[in-house]
Image (cartoon, rainbow, N blue to C red; front, side):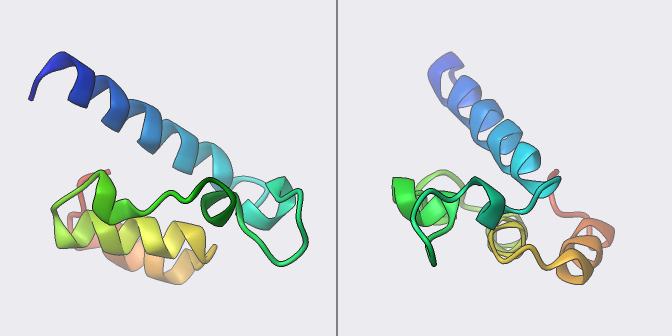
Length: 77
């Protein structure tokens, strides 16, 4: 993986993890829009691994049980 891709991936993951604590809706400026929706972030634009994409979607939905299940299924955290 080249340096820009590696840095972008690390930044994306760090942002998603930071979003976990308060829940994405807590960071939303516009009602009914998540942080990811506001910035047009889609996991598919950054990752190709289906488990990682599913984990990102679980994070967006603030679905803790899905996050735990995917991490146990060896999603690349």
